[in-house]
Structure formats: structure tokens, C-alpha cells
Image (cartoon, rainbow over all chains, first blue to last red; front, side):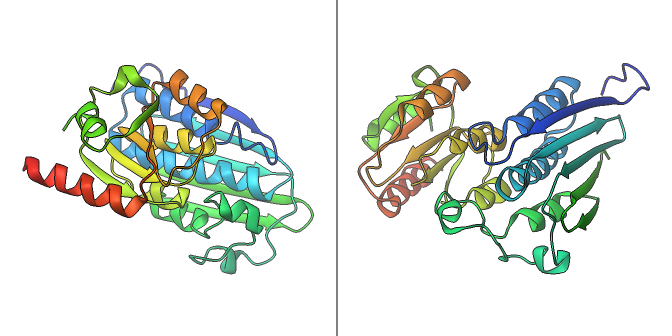
Length: 145
Length: 113
């Protein structure tokens, strides 16, 4: 891989609540950047899945937020931050199959309770911080090795 | 096998991405859950689904699917076709249900080996 500079590259994408039309655009942009730089396909895939799930979580469940990807040669960090309402029970939310998405969202093929578990599988490190009424921040690290 | 050949043999209607039909299809995957396809759909596969909304295009592109087949004769909105066309993603449709299309596709791809 080319190392153009030691400065990590930062991509910030604002995400609007319930904006299904733009849902996935953020992950697509991050994927494009990684492809241009020349990261291995399996790393790009893991980042794309994690970014997509984090992005759709904001679209479906929050009042809006942003996705920030920081890209360096060794590690790709994605920070997904939203403005609320927060996750009451993070342990429960991390369980495969658990979802609070309403039926009409589930009928679209979302809200299967796979989002956070998918992120966990793709990430080398993942933290979820949430405060009710304030919002949720998910930090995902994927190492390039 | 090329997507164009699959489309011909399975009598699939091409809704978008006609210019990209010479792609090779590696395998198939059936799912109506976007997260499942995202996690488990192989690159260059043909994705069979009955979901028709615009996010299907985004997910197919992220996974690197060869194309999407909307099964069960479901109507696809023009904006979804336009998005697929703009992104160069083959979007196909059939009146047959996922089970029938998957069975035929499986036979076609296995027959190649």
C-alpha cells in the first residue's frame, strides 16, 4: 500500500434520521476512499459492513448524527455518534436478534437485530457508550494487518 | 457464468444496468434481511430478494454483488431503477418466487463446474 503521508485521513458524514434514501451513502464513500488508497478487499469489506450497520442504526433508531472515519495505514477507526435517544440496555442491544425497530422498518428488511452483532464481528475493537436522552457513540477499530 | 446468460436462461427482465450484464456471477444468495446479506453475501454473487426499496442498491454495491434479482413479480419503483442504473448495478426481475429462481440458478452454476 502507498503511504502518502503520516497524517491520517478523516471523512465526516452527517446522517439524518429516517433518511433511508441516503442510507448507505456514507459507508459507500468510506469504501471508495479505502479502495482508492488500496487497502486489501477483506479489510474494506469489514469496514464497509461496520460503517453501513452503524450508519443505518443512526438512520433507523436515532434523531440523527454523524459517522467519522479516520484512516491511517495501520488502523481504520469509525466513530458513529448520534443525538439520542440513547440505548437503555446495551448488553441486550448487543444480543443477536434483539431489535426495537417498528414493524414497518422490519418489513423493509431492517431491524433484524443483527446490526451491532455484525459490527462486533467485523471489528478488532468496539465500544458502545450511551446515555439516555443524550445519545450513543460507537467506536470501531479495524486493524490493517 | 455471465449474468447475460443467466438472465436469458432464467427469463429475467432487465430493469437497470444492462451495460454491466457481461459480468461473471460467482454464486447466488437468497435473503430479505439486509444485514444478513451484508454479513454473508459473497462478492460477485447474484442476490435474490423480494425487497424492492432503494437501500437494496446501496447494500448490493457495498457487498460487491454482480447483480440483484427481485423475485415474486414485485413492482420496483422507477427511482430504484434510476439509482441502480446510475451506479451501474444490474437490477433484474422475475415473476417466479425465490425458491424457483434459486433452484434454477443453482443448477446453472453447478452445471458449469
